[in-house]
Structure formats: structure tokens, C-alpha cells
Amino acid sequence: MFKKYDPLKGKIVRIIDDNGKLLKGEELPEIDNEIWVKAMEKMLFARQADLMAVSFQRQGRMFTYPPNLGQEAIATAVGMVNKEEDWFVPAFRELAGWLAKGAQLHEVFLYFKGDEKGSKFVNAPHLLPSSVPIASQLLHAAGIGYSLKYNKKPGVVYGFVGDGGTSEGDFHEALNFAGVWKAPVIFIVQNNQFAISVPRQKQSAAESLAAKGIGYGIPALHVDGNDIMAMYKAVKFAREYAEAGNGPVLIEAETFRMGAHTTSDDPTRYRTAEMEEEWSKKDPVKRLRQYLVSQKLWDEAHEEKLVEEYKEKVEFEFKKAEELYKIELNEIFDYTFEELPPHLLKQKVEYENYLHWKEGRK
Ligand SMILES: Cc1ncc(C[n+]2csc(CCOP(=O)(O)OP(=O)(O)O)c2C)c(N)n1
Image (cartoon, rainbow, N blue to C red; front, top):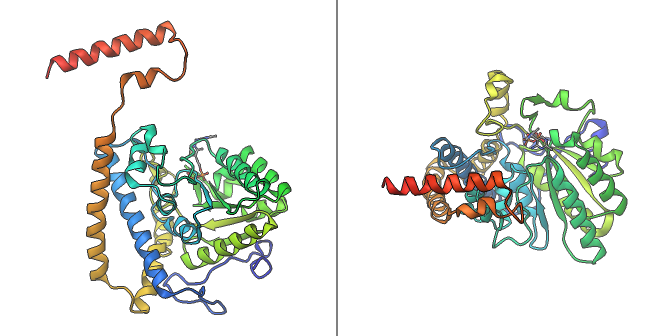
């Protein structure tokens, strides 16, 4: 596969076109069509949860949130390939993957409400919390991979990063370490064309981000990240390669963030409506939908019914997060200093007084 799709020769892994049709010279992965139906359901659920997360934030019920809209195929494909013993090391824009790994949606909401309990993932022991310091998570991914190898344990690690993250020192250190030690890590670069407002062309002079892997002796694939079949094929291949003891793989998944960077960002200030329009034709959900419709496995009425069910489920999970969201005043002050310095003690007393005053007004 590395030969057929050599990124240094400008090759990109792509199986279906923008209308969900099999491309000439390509073959569908050998899996039952029903599995694509399941994948479609997973992508749709993640999309619904994501859209509603943005609206909860707009209602003032949650803090800053990074929308996944348009990127769902990548983490969904990883979820399809994932095995229980594998480790998932996220950045912060891989909701479908966290859910595939066993995260409960209310935990995700709790995290974005600022409650640390949301990072515990009680049913997902091999899922790390979101990582906001860009690319720092990849060092953890490399370390976990090395540990699996050293302790002769099964499984691989999926380490996520964005295009901007590939300019960070941590990215290079992690790749160097994983390459030298042949750690079973699959580095997944979600190239969504922008790092906040910085476009991909200004991010790096490298012809592809996949090429950065090759620089470290890590074989790489450049994949159409909006083609779930291509992503599935690439991740499955990479998993087998890494698990067989051959070392890491880097996958550059070419995609587009259709929403804002976060709910605090306004993308109209740095990208054009034409660009958004162009990429909307490549929407991963649309493409799989078109494939499934052509196979008579999907129709509009079924999708509408599912979306209604998903809306209720997301609402239920969000209410659960709201009920669980209880932060005691002490928790804000307790964990940094053994003894609270006077200026913080003053703030704490002031805030306690404010809370008493507020209580008295009820
Ligand atoms: C070390 C570090 N520097 C800067 C930031 C501020 N920051 C948050 S997101 C972001 C851009 C990340 O872009 P990219 O890696 O392409 O991922 P994307 O957000 O597009 O998924 C930056 C610079 C940060 N969180 N951490």
C-alpha cells in the first residue's frame, strides 16, 4: 500500500468520489455493506451531538467548544478499526472516536462545561483526555506505544494532531522517538486546512504533511479524510503493519473544518464562501449517504427518523451532564498551593461572601 500510494509521488488514497461512486481502479474494502450502514449511523450521531453542542454553548450552558463538522469520517473510521486493547490519544476534535472507544456523551459535555469529572471516561480505560496544549499528546502516544512494545502487550496507539500541530516541537520529538523505537503508533494528522486562521500553505513549505513522517523514517499515507472508505482502508492497513512489529505509520487525512475553529472564532474573517462551498461538495456524510442510497441501503425517511432519535438522546445526555455538574468552591482553590497565598485567600473569602449574599436574595 505504501508503494501504490506513495505520498512523495503525490498519490492520495481515495476510493469513492465526491458523489459516493467507486473510483476507477479502486476496490471497496472487503467488508459487509451493513458495516457501512453502521458507520453512517455513527457519523450521523456524532454530527448531531456536535451541532447540538454548539447550540448548548450559544445558550450559555457550556463553555468554548471545537466543532467537528465535516471531519467526522476520520475518527469514525478509526473507531471501526479500533480494538479493545488499542489506545486512543486525542487532540480535541475527534468526538466520533471518543464515543467509539466508550466515552459517554455526558462525560464529553461535562468536560466542555469545565468539570474535570468529564475527563475520567469511566467505561473507556484506553482513552486519554482531550489535549489542548497543541501536539503535547503525541509524546504520550509515543510513550504508550513504546510501553506496549517493551512490555510485549497487544494493541496499537492512535495519536491525533492537527495540521498546525505538525509545526510544534512535540510533534517532531514524538515522531523521532516512535520511529527510532519502532513503537506501534499510528499518527493521524487531521489536515483541516486551517490552524485557527493560519492556512495550510502558510503552515509548512512541505509538499504534504505525510512527507514529515517519511523524514523520520516513518512510512506515511496521504488520505482523502472525507472518504470514510479510504480512511478505513488506510487505518486498517496501518494497524496491521504496526501490530506486526514494523513500527509507526503516519496518516495525513485531508479534510475541512466546516464550522468555526471554536465557538469563540469567526471563520468569515479568514476564508471565503467559495472555499466553504467547494468543500461542502466533499462532505463525508453526504458521500457515504450517496453510496448507501445507490445500494438501496438508506433513504431519507429513515435518516429523518434516526436524527429525531439522536436529538432526544443528545438532549438526555446533556441534561445528565447538567445534573452531575456540581463544583464546590474549595475545588477551585484547593489543588495548586499547599497553603493558600494571601491574595487568593482574600479572593476566596470575597467569593464566599458573594455566594452568601446571593443565597440571601432568594
Ligand atoms: C502549545 C499551544 N500553542 C498554542 C495554542 C493555541 N491554539 C489552540 S488551537 C490552535 C490551532 C491548532 O490548529 P491545528 O493543529 O491545525 O488543529 P485544529 O484546531 O485545526 O484541529 C492554537 C494555535 C495551544 N492550545 N497550545
